[in-house]
Length: 503
Ligand code: KIV
Ligand code: ZN
Image (cartoon, rainbow, N blue to C red; front, top):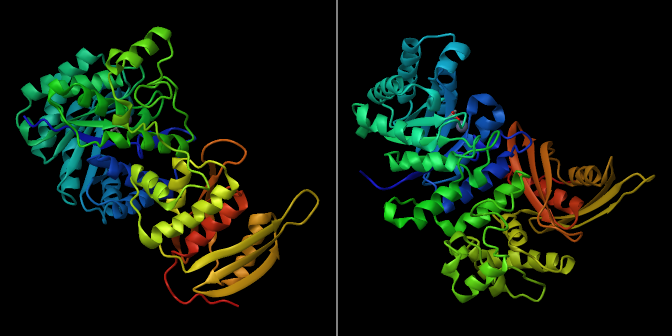
């Protein structure tokens, strides 16, 4: 049996179902690219029928990533599958993930149906999805509480119908590790044609057993693990990607390997936490603030003598880099280039110069710049800019009408306009519209802090609609209004090219 374990990341689908942690499309694209660099094999990008935003995210992620398989979720219903297929039209390696509940609870209470009818619906859904894509994954929802004999019949039938991967979710997080492992073993031993498909684990953490159950599944023959960064997900969450990756790396005697570049774990963990506004518990395995902090006297004495006394993982292996961070206004280009490279961003020449310019401007306002700050700066330099903000001045406060003056450089020509508005940003947008007659409607705006402190930098993600199409922009600055204006201009720089008509 092949010893490769495929890592299927569902941070952007199951993980994103956490109330209050929704991501916008720009953020999802940013994370999808980071997941690609991390080395995940499959990115579950969304549930397209559930909302236009989810549909759009699958489309954009399909365009943005190259080698990972992009997967879209659907129920075992033709209209869901049609939408999933449509959303995957730009994916280089598309996969439709379709399925239905197989436990007595689902069959009786959710569908008011019978085992035979559910089995037929499962088979038809797989056959229907196969018309669109070769790679079809089937999920037997609540497989954890499904009788093994019936589950084996379903799995055999969907493999015969063409499923390339069969997912065995412990949807409610109820199984014991032994029980879940035995379930996978039963399927490996009783399903005819099991070698034609990959069996996947998908475990929830309601009783704190998601990682243990996933490991039990892998040890009994599953070769795909469905996971999320930081274990995010509904209720108590899903299995953590970082835990599975580091268990398999540390226990090399198991001879199971993944494609994960573990040195990228720490930075993606922090990005997910900050984008989802979801703090990581300090004692979270692998990525918690205290995961490598030895505070007791005995432990400190031990690690000072030899790290292996109490440390089973080298923090560098998960990307914690102690000689890290802190760049200041006195840091040179080389230091900036080095820190960006440590964080997976390789830049040179003009691109580096542009980021360095912004870096110096920010360093003037903020004493110390961390990895997140410079990554934000690098993110703002992804594409060519025809329009740049030369300056922006805003007057606002209590009892005054906000007024903003904006100076723009449009392909070398200088323009200036001023306007009042409901707030300094509204005033700035109105001023920009006096210069450029391409007015867009702001659909989504999120403002987040990057690190901490009063001199912190903020990140602004914006979605605007222009001529019926969405555009995404990003800005970062210590000044919220300036960052928001930058994000707006970033959107405008992505509009289809025609000479910007100005007055
Ligand atoms: O937990 C679950 O059963 C799921 C399926 C939709 C795959 O997330
Ligand atoms: Zn799930």
